[in-house]
Image 1 (cartoon, helix red, strand yellow):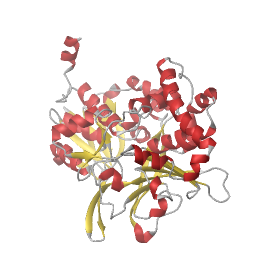
Image 2 (spheres, helix red, strand yellow):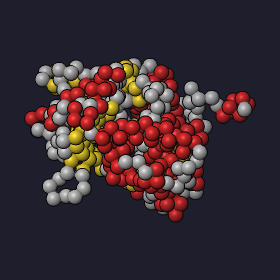
Image 3 (cartoon, one colour):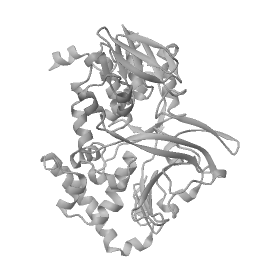
Image 4 (cartoon, helix red, strand yellow):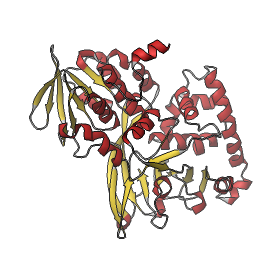
Length: 436
């Protein structure tokens, strides 16, 4: 059987890896580099060569079981990472940090700005965080969040405004690479489910890890099984479904016939490829929007919190541009903490910064897109089964879940299994049924 896989992000690579063990697989990607958001770049930092990730950076074994199993299967070496979160507003006018390796570090971060010790609204926010953590878990378990947006739930529970503006919205914006104001439209049920599953509402947090040497290490091993079938720098211009299979037309002028096609791109890109998309495909694939983001790899400390005690692994920056009523947002990732890079070489990845880092301190500029979630998007996900496998066309990608690496690999492997492939660490369906 001939199968075309379009896209070499984690979903496409996982699907192609599993399928290539049984079928003839051809993999397309418009980029000349396989990996998608798994993007490691090597820079010259004052004469030292450093490998750093600018997309996928960290995972944990609790919430990423398929990715963890893949790394073990491929023999990928990983090391512990350090996770913490900070908010800084208007160039340091207000800032705080949550999380740390020790209770002392945590306390120093919470009160990195000493005057917060005497701020009733800030102290109430800290109290409200604890209340929200317990109350939201209780409401989720009781089914009381269904149909609520995060903003509606927040207002219904009458939390103080700072809980949303200085904690929940910034945290959500940093996680989903979305404007903070859009977090108000995020379904409360999905928001709390994600936070709870990732232990963000509990004290016992999972240990986060990162790939030693960068994510390209696993991409190299994963794609080795089908390296001779990779068509990089080859964009798919259209997909035509016929009574006998599918025809893939590419930017090199080729048209190749396959028995099945697995589209492992963003959902809007998948829809654009289908020359004969029907109403259900348009309704489902078109329901998830994407946000373009500009990414800088740099060493400019101006894009970090003003106070060093407030520096965290993830730093949410809020500011107000002149003449604009609403605040913009940005996130800076402290790569020294996330990937164990020597602190003597400060290194940062900034997403949509309020100003460009100093060109003399910048190593690279990149563009990427992230899915944006609301009630309609999650409803469309629930309908994916209506089009999955129809007309010999399959869909996978991180967009089928919460937009993360585990969502991507899970969806890619599931499509491969539906086509008859096997995954070493997953029990065959017949064994699962027998056990039940």
